Structures are given as C-alpha cells and as structure tokens.
Image (cartoon, rainbow, N blue to C red; front, side, top):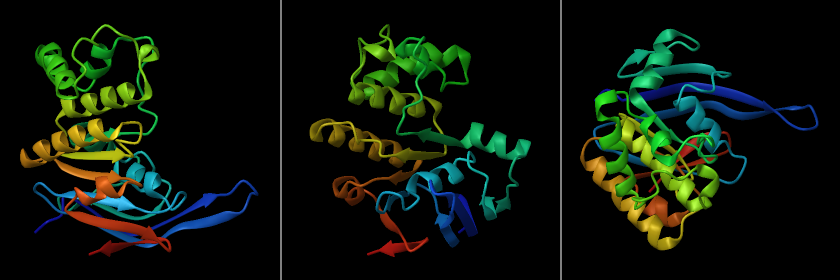
Length: 222
C-alpha cells in the first residue's frame, strides 16, 4: 500500500527564548495510509504536535528530511507543494484563522473552489456543525466554541483528501465535541483521512491509530 503522506528522517530544531537551539524532531518517521484512516497525535505541551501538523500541511518547511505524497516526493517551497496544499489539505488550526471583517458564511465559502456551489455548500456545512442562522454574523460576535465550529465547517466545505486538526474540540463542551467527532466519522466513511493533534483521551479513543510524540520521535500506542 502506498501511503497518502509519508515523512521520512524528519529532523527539526527550534530556537528557545534563551537563544539556544533545541532539537524538536530527530529522524522522525510518519506514515499516513488510506482510505479512511484516522490518526491521533498525542504528547505533552511543547512536544511538537502543532509543528508536525504544519509540516504535514506544507506550511513549515524549516526541516531536514523527505515528504512524499502518494509515493512521490514533494520538494519544499515549490509550486507542486503549494498545489498539494491547495488541492488535498484542509487544516483546522487552534487560532481558527477567520476573517473578522467577513461574515460567517463568507468565511466558510472560502473553502469552496467551485464558485457555483459556494452558497449551497457553505450553508450545508454550517448546518452540519449546528450553526444554521449564523450566516450573517461576524467572527467577533461568536464564542470560542462557535468560532471553532466555523473553522471546522470551512475545512469540511473544501472536501480535502486529508484533514489536519489541531485540538479541534478544545473550545467545545462534551456534547458538542461528541457531535463533531460523529461528523468526522461520517466524513471518514466517505473517504477523508484525519490527523488530529489532541490532549483529549476522548478524542484519541475515537481514532483508529494513536501515536505519541515522545523523545523527539513518534511511537505507536496499542
């Protein structure tokens, strides 16, 4: 089986506040198989979960190692990497990355490349995250949990091959978290592959694989 995404020999350092460099990853390996796999990335704060997602998204290229997509290498800072990110990756970040001067519906429409389908799909995705009636609101009018669900709706609207989610339920109550995880499971059945960085054992328990970032590399949890 050819992996959807395969990272090999990833080495990366980060600069600490005291000016010293700290090795974050050393010869890290990551393999994401498809179809319909869900992977939880666990680890303590500062272990590199968010950084790993940014590497997978093609947003962080300050590392040494190899990135393969469907068996083909992708070089950093190339048009091919940018196209890969646009065509195949959906990224739910902890900061949500919503445009404050645009409506909720407009923010979700940004995920839809087919202009003729933008309105219909945006409203359908808002309904999926139980935000019907919020279309004309602005992000500043939303609670943290509502903003998080708008970010989720925007990624769902894009219909990416791989969804990267950084603490996607961190601002949600337990009931809403459960409904969002049910939605993720439905999308997984339709062919989407999820990589979720989380501190939540409830979230991790819903994933098919669980990996932990520990000691600068990834280990599989049984």
